[in-house]
Amino acid sequence: MAGDWLQGPYVFSLYQHYGFSVNQIGLLFIAGFGSSLVFGTFVGSLADRIGRKKACLLYCVIYVASCLTKHWADFRVLLLGRVFGGIATSLLFSAFESWLVAEHFKKGFDESLLGSTFSRAVFYGNGLVAILAGVLANFLVDSLDLGPVAPFDAAIVFLSVGGVIILLTWAENKGSGDQRAGVVAQFLEAGRVILNDRNVFLLGCMQALFEGAMYSFVFLWTPSLSVEGEELQHGLVFSNFMLSCMIGSNIAGMLMDQGYNPESYMRLVFALGSACMFVVFYSHYSAPDKNVVLQAAGDIRLMAFCFFEIIVGIFWPSMMKMRSAHIPDKVRSTVINIFRMPLNIFVCAILLNVDDGNIMFMFLMCSAFLASACACQVSMHSKAEK
Image (cartoon, rainbow, N blue to C red):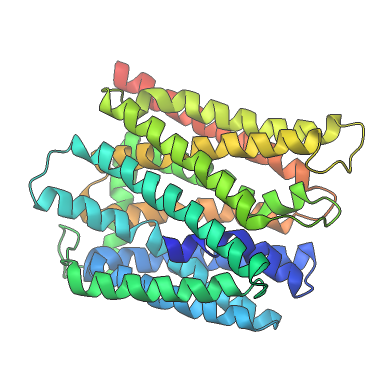
């Protein structure tokens, strides 16, 4: 996770440093989500067939290649790097979770322990490690003045170390289905699961809608806090976001430890997330001075972003717990990646329509995505109560 989080604060900033416009940067982001749409689903299916450990090792290799491309200010090279990054992201958000769930049950641990395991994983991996990564990235760029490519070089080191640890210490596991089945058969089986199980379908919709809003936010937060190109301490702002994410994961862990089902409390979580994005949209159009940055309306945006990160921290362990309960092991990685297809389409559609004049309107779209996720969760919960 350190290898991923080190890159987060400076992706947009690096492209700005190379002189690319917001539209060009949007195209680079689209390349990443597009590759995840086209190739990510395929490699996610391979994880169930050839082994999750191999898929996690492949993640490390591909992400290292993506980081290396950041040394070139050539648009085509950076585009290739985004393609590599899109594939790696698909593996990160499916193969690791699938490996953990399979190992958990293989070793005979109780299913109820998965909630606290996911909560701790998000707390340390998406929270503490991300904060330290943000501080380190800020130190490399601002204190040592090594430039915005330095965090990507540091990410290569962490990804390489992580790959060695996986290679030497992890056991291999695969989906529990027929390993002789081809990729097409794997997709057909995953499709049958989605169509025949209403809960799996609704979970997939919630995943796509929430992550669509979240990944749009990843692109949008920098220009929304720097309307006129003002300097931001990206690493420190990012660390604040990740501190908020830690708080959220801790809240999710406490809720699940006290016996609350994610199916019940996630209704409120999605609704609050929608409200956060709407506040960002409203703060821009209600501000008397549209260029106020990190003051008045800008402060409101920053607080809304931090609160949204709390929502993100609650979402990850809760969604992982629901997926472990409803998605069969034999097609877990495949199903997760199938629902990354609409997610990537959502984000690409948003980024294709981004320019300096309508960035704030994109937050209204994110609010609508999260409201729709809330409706899906309400439907799932009401069905379970009958």
